[in-house]
Length: 159
Ligand SMILES: [Fe+2]
Image 1: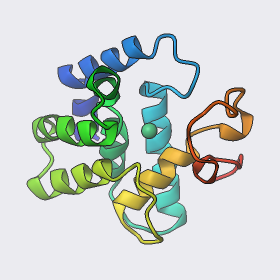
Image 2 (image 1 turned 90 degrees about the vertical axis):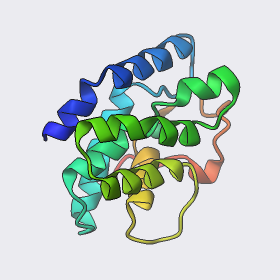
Image 3 (image 1 turned 180 degrees about the vertical axis):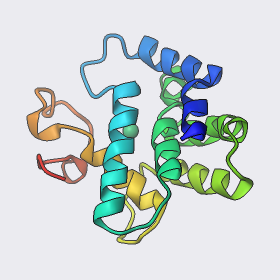
Image 4 (image 1 turned 90 degrees about the horizontal axis):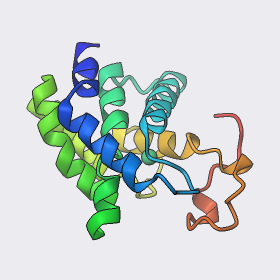
């Protein structure tokens, strides 16, 4: 997956992850770090296989790796992180060699990844579900203080 390697090694991707890490160094809630991004990629690909959605692995990994790269901007100036990430992802996707249609598909999925989406077979919903499933709310010591709605927390161990 050369395009995924290109994202992973992109200087701006690395820079945004470093900014997330800096802003979250004292955070007690879920982090938006490389572990989370890779968890979402892998869970998204499992859901894709289990549900026979047929998305290319590169599309899922690209959306997952980039979906939270703008979290630091939310801490900095209040820009919702799904919007910031959708904005920041385009240059990296283009540099990695994704086509304009692929870029738009991934950007759309990132832009809606905090919206509860009805049952459908879109990459948008796949990213949304993988993001939730990646969180260990059922085992979290901070769940009483977390501002996620109870209906949006992940209460189950299995996918
Ligand atoms: Fe996320």
